Image (cartoon, rainbow, N blue to C red; front, side):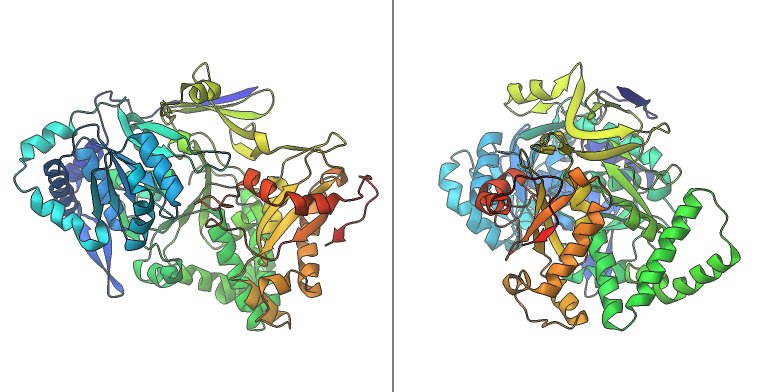
Length: 611
């Protein structure tokens, strides 16, 4: 067992709640630009004072509409300014928000709303309303439904003019730090979603301590800014949104990934928040674009030089003159163009939800972008550990944040205790008792703490595969490097109680046409056709070989199947943060997996076979 504790750097305030973060920002910088709203290709400013006034007005509307302190309000909405506006307005009204992913199915909406006991719901679009309407009859407690795209927020504001400032001030001060701030349902990757009770202290204390630890990221000569594009319904983006309000960071929103590059170009953020798949796509798209322009060799050479350069810097080694010249050349030809594509001002990128991989970390580092890989869960209010601008180690998820302690149990499971850990699972004392031991939250993840106090995550405890030969295999160690290939969409390693390790693999539908064209194949080929194409299979084999080079023969993938379609969130195979729902996939593709092992009894002597 190994343990590291980081004392809190900001004293806890047992009377504080989330509204105090906005009140504090209002007192500090009332006229600073806190948000930027998209406006005909540009951005219109919203000051702290203007945001606060809008929050108060909407809170009054909710009160006038019958919302009582402690009421739970559902929200289905993509990442946009109104998300955070509603979040704070609900807190100022004394209520509790229950976010629902905009991609959730009617049955998932029904479960979250009924289990939480929500009495009203805010819905963004007609499509969202249609899904909710399918199950509305099964939700008798829901007596108010507001649709954002129909102007219902303005209608709420208009109806609240009779509510006094004093009533909102009274309500916003009702909650203390130990009270529930929000009820967030887990993504359900291992079963029915559980409601995580996150308190005001979880947000307030974690934000205040993270603000100190990440001060270099959250400040700057001309002010820090970020463009949010991952879903705010997830605790990762939700916490960052609150952190930005607390620290006065300018925030913009762009939920449409097809408009992301133009938005980055006009917004020019100083830091980004993304999941590893986004960084993989940025890299892969740049590589394939270079390949299409006949500059594939230059890009690969530049990528190799970038990784070597970053590794040398991290090790404290001096760069030889020729290395500096080569790096400067590649900076002009390749790196500068990638920086410009991201707006030109990005200095930091916070990555979470899955391992990034050292190769990408070093590559972006040499672009002048420090990727601060972190680790956390819904139950830890997002961050538990994170690499810092002043204390970073590529390939790890960093040291604990101030106010957080991390230990690894005898079996390698990561346990966390601190200001960020949730209170309980809603109405589920058995599940709560199962994950706590002496105040430590047992994450279910396997990891290790090095001598410098940096945590590395190696896999999920429940996902460890034990082969028929008794070998323990962490799927992520194989899946992540395979998925970094531009052609690959998703990877699911299999082999529990089987004679060898296998894998189900899908192709990336966005990258496939580009890759096919660059490799002299028919770019119009369907996923099903490509899954049987010899050239495509050879590339998949190279990706598998690349992953196998990192592990022992007993842990290596001996067979793989390229599926003829995708694994999507809509089909129930991915969570909203694009993590695979392993148990669902194993169930639905059981026959495919069994066919892979048909007639196989030998583990060590089998060659790799494409199927």
